Amino acid sequence: MTRTEIRASTSLAGIFALRMLGLFLILPVFAVHAHSMPGGGSATLVGLAMGIYGLTQSFGQIPLGIASDRYGRKRVIVIGLILFALGSFVAAAATDIYWIIAGRALQGAGAISAAITALVADSTRDEHRTKAMAMIGGSIGLTFAASLVLSPLLYRAIGMGGIFALTGVLSLLAIVVVIYVVPAAPPLPAERTPIRAVLANRELMRLNYGVFALHATQMAMFVVMPAALIRLGHLPLTEHWKVYLPVVALSFLLMLPPIFVSEKHGKSKQVFVGAIALLLLVQIGMGVLLSGVHASWPWLLALLLAFFLAFNILEASQPSLVSRIAPPSAKGAALGVYNTLQALGLFCGGALGGLLAQHAGPNAVFVLGGVLTTAWLIIAANMKNLPRRSRIEAAAV
Image (cartoon, rainbow, N blue to C red; front, side, top):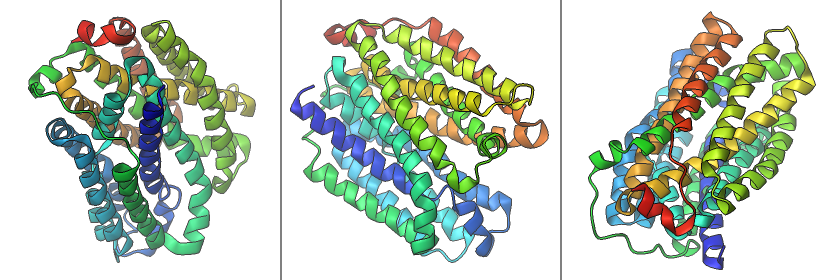
């Protein structure tokens, strides 16, 4: 990678990390804190406060992705970060659960994932794009693990309002990074591609289903995972970071060789399908493990490592594949559709995972994940194997 590519990739990954840290910091403590607020005794309202961010994200990704194709990536990213900061400060000043919901909805309206990933795609060559996306995927995983450590400490030090205010400050810092650190974006193509051409592209449809299945499976799985760590590892909730942090860090290191192989030798499809198959094996293994027949703490750790390895490979590969398949003038629109399905996957996975865990037991959650992943494996097996390097755009469009 050139210095410009490294600078673009690392700075944009940093923006993602700053923004996601602001989101993740509230997850370990908000459900408990909400009981001290007017309206916080309603589990429905607490769940709405947690989930409405993903819902408004899903509404905003396509329009802001299209806007980034027409008016420039950086401009749209800055506007989205401003919206996110405003929502953070509204939530920081909230005196009841309803204002928290309003603030979280406004945070989600700053849906800039498509614009950021499109800018990464614009700023990197084909042969290095998956590595750049891997930086973003790795930063998200490490940020999630770090938030599990920092959140209880910050909650004791500055309270829930302080955490929300901190998310706003982090978003404003990200604006500074966009303006002064991220390299200038290359000029956008003059031609226009209608959104219907994006929606009708079969290869993009495969990837859109994939990101929905991946994040629905992730959210459903982590509805029951905390209880499994408590039961099998005898770890209190405040110490779960001792598992997540090393597992996520090790999985990030282990994902690098497959990513390099897929880029260097044109094996993107093989690595991609292999990661989906690994994800399916994790769902089967977790279902067997948590059934109580072969309950084992080492096996739980091994399956968690395998999950994060598969998740990180897929999280890095899919946006890269979308950017390579999409028409050059519609990368933002294509990534907008992709990120909309991602947000809907998070929403549906959490809702269905909770419903199944409550009424059918934790094993049903992994049945759901297994069904979604099996369908994905069948769909992905029929995808085209993209050629390497500069031939990609011409062959895929």
